[in-house]
Image (cartoon, rainbow, N blue to C red; front, side):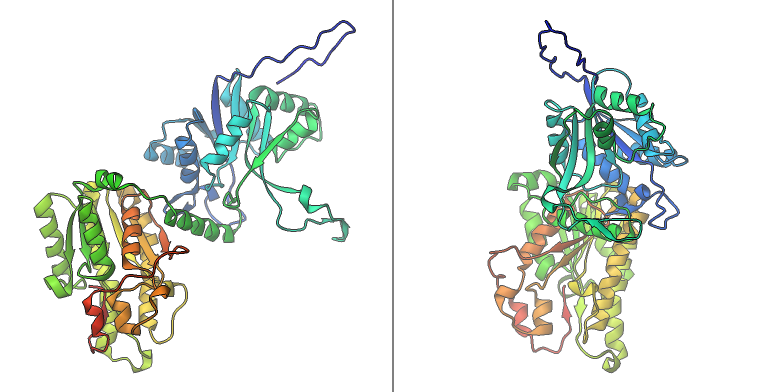
Length: 501
């Protein structure tokens, strides 16, 4: 926005007219090619937490009440891919999906042309920052009532050094004055247009940062900095993919829970099938969901004679639930076996039982559940354990099958996305269940997670829109010790294998 700074001896200072933008537009910059990630597709199309990165990013702006319109500038040649994501997700605020330029400044110019004339708030955001919070969006927009340019940044936790061409230190700036820049960067449209108009006359002009253009070519313009967040990372390198995925998992685990009325509204009329529902986590989930109005059908070897590794048993269980209610919204698989012992000393029958119940069973259930879940756009929920990240001695097969379930979750979430079916996996820390007691004996209560807590988190995931997630469930600080496990736990010395149902 241009301002007339010309004054004469008799000039009276004028109060600038209050800023009255016609709308607020989020410009999502998705021009990256994924070169540093070593991908054959642009990094913004890479899936994290079951969805393309750009879909997560667009969802933030779609949900933000401060945003009226979204414009996507996509890498050339991939506009149809981005448009397909927009159409499938049903983003109503996205007005345009167009190709970006060869450089950042060229892309910004294309964006400004796409926004059109008039007084508008514009937020430029990297598509590969999918963990942007609604709080940051809100504060950026609010700051534009006072400032014409706004940046987002966080303090630097590291000492920053300046080096010369020989990689020798030339300066070490005071860390307290340094910030690490993030996006979005927000502007009154007149300000960013004027900065780029002046920059066009500079033959050496090159921009990687829009606030930098304002700083250089409109030096008298204050640029307000608001607090970003450590989670608002940019997915640039391979390690960032893993970090972002984990951050989504943590965010899912910390999602606020509904009121009892909210759960009842979500669950009334839904049908849930629980394999392994006789005791432990499966039993607690069954009881909790029923209290909130869901129709729950628990199946297990001990109560219904259902063996999850037998296709005919799984088929019969699903058919029973469907014929009773006419629908199946969620299928939960808590059934499992934990057999301890050296692999070299384990007999073939035991190995087959562990592999079939812990892995073949969930695979069988997944295959047979899909037709039912397609009808309701439902969810398959599996369970892993902390041993999936590193195999444990004396229960190698258990660890291996739990790692396989994580892989299965991530693969099926991709395969079934086109059907609208979600797949997630719960990863509870050590939990007070009969299975654990049989395998490890009595343990101090304060060291174990309550099965009820895992059931509650499981219910939260079932009614969420998450997919492709491995959700960690941990004891909260100050949480009461796990409640006593059911009577089956007293049979810890029995020779029968430990099972979840």
